[in-house]
Length: 220
Image 1 (tube, helix red, strand yellow):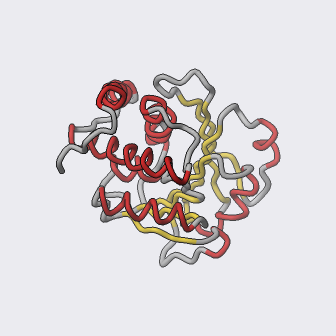
Image 2 (spheres, helix red, strand yellow):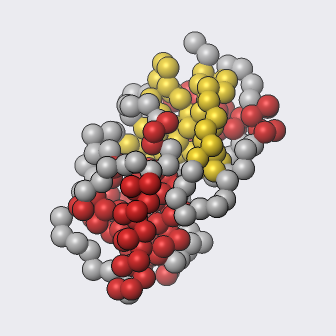
């Protein structure tokens, strides 16, 4: 895949360096083509942002840290298997995960038509053949098979996520909810049949803000 033409050489050049060092800091192996594809995703997002404001982040280096590295920091804590990114929005964390893990089946679910149009372009541009798009609400989603992992980034409270998506989990599957500060009250409010399997404090290269991953499981 050829290298994408950056929009503004200096900012995107710095973003490329930030991405490379950030991936190394996370211990993630990524070749030059993988890094180019991640930058191509961000460049497409920046172009769409000019019209649709899909995210509030516009600076290329900030996009690398707050979108790509933030999304990929959860990878060491995810089991293998089919993944649903609920409320995917601009494709976070689903797109970065799909780029890094080409053999993982990923479904991006969102109720917004304009976000689906954006994700359609990204999936085609990056040739993400293992990625499926689902337009609609998580409550109405009816997949052919359940998911081993369901990710949720800034979606809702832990209980609401579990109630909305828990029926979509495969036996032994988990919900991986991305949070900022430790959501102590939300954790305490999680009710059966769901339990907290693990809570991980995440270190995102370049970000001083607190990040946590809360992993929920459903009792057999």
